[in-house]
Image 1 (cartoon, rainbow, N blue to C red):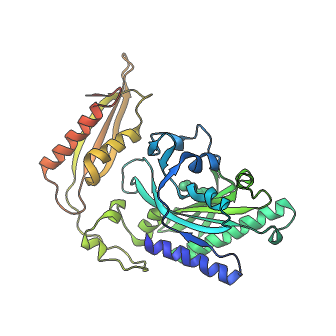
Image 2: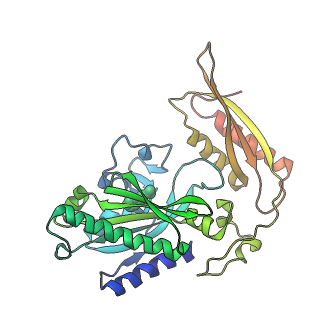
Image 3: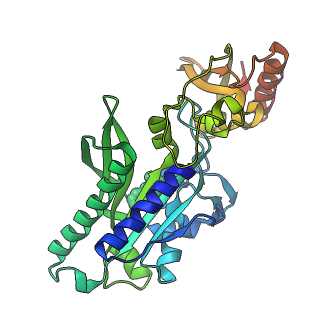
Length: 337
Ligand code: PHE
């Protein structure tokens, strides 16, 4: 993550000196605990947006959360007068359990506010200037990371930018989503006291890029302290991971009745991570049905256990599976089957 962060930080440093543009201030040590105001309200995230729910975001209290994205710091920095900045940090989301999702991941945010002198007085032209500058800067970042590749821009939606876009890069025959971005919503600019200015913002998820660039097949490896993983990499260099042999997988099923009003799949995934830890490689939903007479809802999940570092013992898997069942049975509306 540090290698990628450095490449992006350096790219923007170089860009500012080449274009005589503003210098990007860099931040990478903001604590991940933020307010719902900074993370949602200030970014115009609607009250009913799914990202606000307890099943998507980790709440500390009703108005304090673990940041689900680095955009949480945007308005605070704009208010304090930063006109160009990069923020890197750890982010937290409740999500499914598989090779590319982990509750902690890293993002980098970039923001640039333009001096009105440098933009056309015609708002439509100015908007195009901002978007063109954004796209050129980001295509430059993507080229630094991936080399010369086919790239495409896709229309996107974010509550805090308008217009919004996503950049995809063709990599190993597939289109890989690299980042989201857009022109900062004019209401945000007004709210931070910069109503006469325009600016752009982008957000990059670092693990997804690192998995592609370094050929890392499982996101949990980034948390491994196995020397067979760590010794393959050098700071500042992008090199390919040579996989070591995998240990056997052990699968266990759990099925239960639940109340769809009270229980979300992400609640199940959170329980599994909590009760069984990092030796869960993925969780698959095998079956889901509504009982035709009683209308009760049932789900069957398969938990696939595998350590990256050793062969798991049956007894320890049994303990984790029992933990999952116990915690699950204590949830409102849940009955194990
Ligand atoms: N915060 C967005 C995300 O996490 C990314 C983004 C940042 C989009 C800034 C637009 C502008 O998906």
